[in-house]
Amino acid sequence: MLRPIIAMLSLACCVTSQAGEIRVHFTNLSNQSTPVMVAVFATQDQYQTKHPYRGQKLMASQNLVADFPALPPGDYVVAAYQDDNGNGMLDRNDEDWPMEPYGFGHRPTFTIGAPSFAQLAIHLENDGTQELDLALH
Image (tube, rainbow, N blue to C red; front, side, top):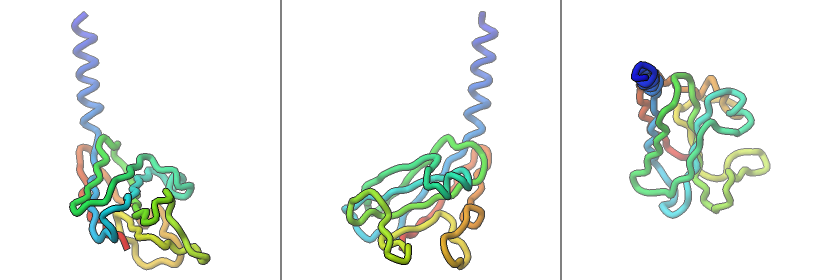
């Protein structure tokens, strides 16, 4: 009776030890009274369809940090924007350029159009923590 319980606890220990964390420190917030939307994408498809693996809506503050714990090892893209008008979406102009402050956890080299998942991806190791400084522009 005790052996199955010990085996389950051993497995639980091993599973949780395979998790990493992404911690995002925000800088350059345009406004301290509007929400910041932050998303973590785990695949190219999630990134392209704008369906994140995880997301958070946070109220802006001077030392704003978003934590994404218990992530499996792999590649991730972190994207965020500040919803200055509170409508719950990133507003764009007629040429499809963002009109609200936005940014990525990994800054790509200059691209024409939206950067790809591969250009923005960061790698998360087992038990690792990726600390990102994300400036919204």
